[in-house]
Length: 341
Image 1: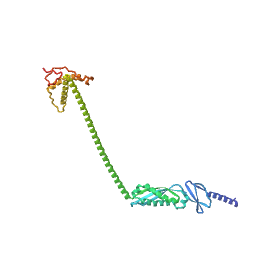
Image 2: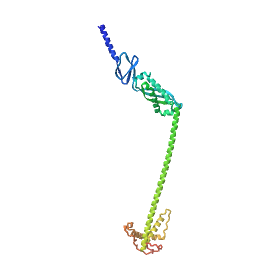
Image 3: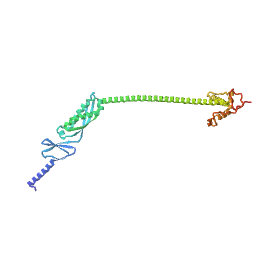
Image 4: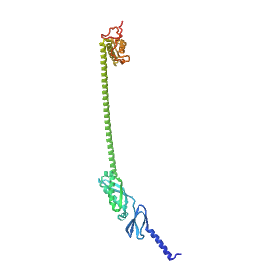
């Protein structure tokens, strides 16, 4: 049975426990709590264990100190060139002073949204439609600068403002689509013309290079032909000199060999003529053909058995054995010729 004193003690103990719990406050991480005494702000409780005066102090506002995002609802904006577009966005802010955010502004989130919407109309309304569509980063930067300066007294820092969508009216979108298509067709035509121009230039360059190479080839061929004729003339002069020396020493066979060689060369060219169907050989030709053996002997004696002059230094043409001369051409002696009976 409890008596009156015992009940009193139990009440006192219970009151002490309630008072202790009322004076101890645990603030979670990321939050700040304001403390009011008789309705007036006195202090701010930081994350962790805190003590307040029970029955005199009370928790005023529990402020979220983490970065938060609020949606900026869609609104119509009239651009500088009288185009109406629909714009929405996001704003990221963080409370840095719980007391100011609690007591300097009522309904902080709504205030930030309204302030951002107002500045969107102000900033984007001063721009042309093309500038608005192509300079979104500039819009975000200007909005952040203006809104952040406005919310400073509220103990809030606006970190970012992002414009999500800029939607022009349907007829304007169609016009922009036609404009884009025309621009792309224009680029395609220009690129095609540029390709044709480059192709023509490359073909002309190729033809030019081909003509240059052909001309260089003809020049090289003419040079080599001239060189060949020059060496042939030198050889002819050398042969003439050798024959003249041999004749000067009384060797007429060398002169006969020289004349017979020219005769055979002319006869060979005549026989190789493409239009030559019938070849009439003069009487003197049979004499010349009959003297081939003698010519061969003379050539061997003159240039050596290997055809390269025998490697000797002697320029004297050996005298071929003389045969009785027939009725050949005057002044032309055919070694090895046997007159007909």
